[in-house]
Image 1: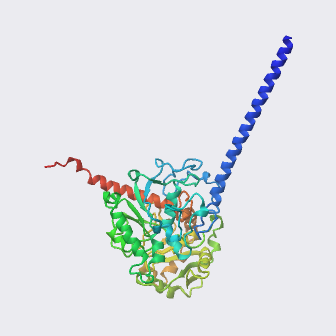
Image 2: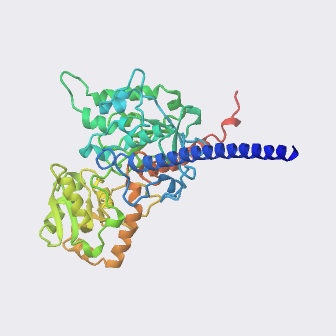
Image 3: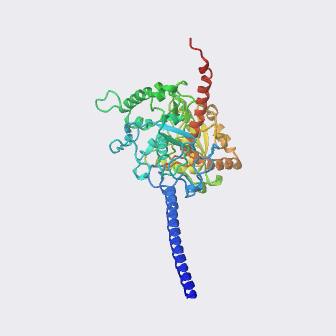
Length: 481
């Protein structure tokens, strides 16, 4: 009986052990399946949920040479030396304001000021589109509109910082408490407003663009957040040279995101307080692995665009007559119409040097087209201000020529033909390294144009705080009589 009892107990133990192992195996299989699904979802989101910054369409990858899994580069350092704040493995969930470089309060302006200009309308009381699903995000209009679309990409980045399933570097994080904010962002699509609504319609006495500016000024001037520092800690994007022409003069103390400093007095726009942002380039980005080296670029110098310009752009016309008959130079009229952009992209990608000459303003998207094509830019624009120049040394990948020298017969060609292959190749290699700093896309990528702008804003904020703190030194020691 004792042996039978022992045998019975052994059988019972084996049955219990088997059941435990079966349950444990099922649980581990379920968990592993879930984790694989999450990982697969991250890979899919990282590789296929981008807007193509070249044409605003879906889907697209960022750059062909970038790894598919964003978690592989989430902690990389941008060219400015700032470490990305996303956690290792990629951010899952809304960004943590305590870990972000910049905490941003974004005003909930009516959609007429932003996505409504893209013909978007939400449901009742819905101010912002749902950015968790890229297919629901309104597209920015193509063509030359895109070159000044900076406010669009910054706004999307802030919206995504509070969206759990959109991967983001979390450089800037939207906060909903004004007391937590480092900067106050004004989400007005001012360049699009100018491009689409600056002309009078019907019996209008003022254009929609002017009316929106007036309403914006009234709104901001009435806010306690503006009154606190007189608007110095407010960020407004006015990238098109003609955008916010009325409001800029009334909101001058604010920090502006600009293409350059042309046409405005120094008290309204200056490099001490404002941020220069790159144009959104029009040509397609050349992957580093496909970039043609020195010997495979038969054109010495490339320029295609408007030649007869006013003011500082007169040098374009003078250079045209100096260079148009040179056999290894492409200097021709061109526009964005028809196949002009694609033609320019192919030409730049086949050229050693690309001319960036002042036009109606000191800057143009031509410089950033050249960078995207890895064509060494020749900058002939004495008054130009360049994006991120406090952290990027443009002399490493650009050649600067004074306008007065450029128009001397033989000067420019002798200079460029004297550049040895080793020197050109060094600049070309550097172009491939920094090209990502000028890319706009959604979701944003560590070290791209969106994050470089936020970092530049952060550096300006430090200066503002320094001045405010100095001014407050003796505020508490004043005697009241």
